[in-house]
Image 1 (cartoon, helix red, strand yellow):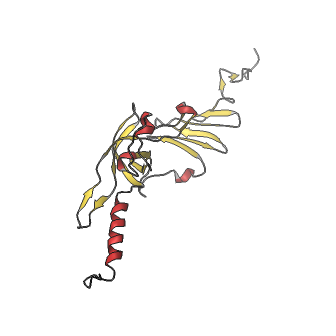
Image 2 (tube, one colour; image 1 turned 90 degrees about the vertical axis):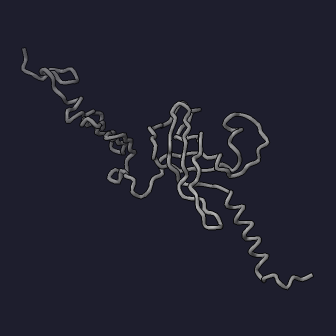
Image 3 (cartoon, one colour; image 1 turned 45 degrees about the vertical axis):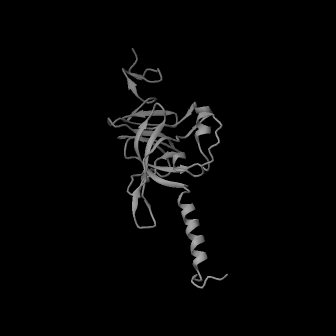
Length: 201
């Protein structure tokens, strides 16, 4: 029996509403902010950026996600890699696993079938807004920096400036520290290589 009160697009709107509600619970990736970090466990408490908006116009901050694994570049079973300090307020990228992470992290085998859930977040540190500083002047080099220290690895050699003002460079078989060459430095009339350069005795 036909319903004369049914609007032409009513079925379409119902389907679209149902789809939107389902997609609202599917999380893929979000920028986030680290609330706290534990180096001992390599886990962080992270606040996703943005707000969760309801159909009635209300919006809420995303909840803090606890015990989030932090992903640093590592290999060789964890015996080789790079880590760096993290502090509250640091930016990151949160990605959400397709299925629950509990079994992977604990080695278990549960029947939990949740998908793309916020509780299954992984944190990749280093995502900042456009205001974040970068080493634009050394765009062709590999840069390692911490505080006021900067070390560069480029095609021409290895160099750096430390926070205390010490500078060095290593290239062409010579190490130069604060302008003093290791191979060309003279000390007490003897070159660093061991040959005397002063007048004969």
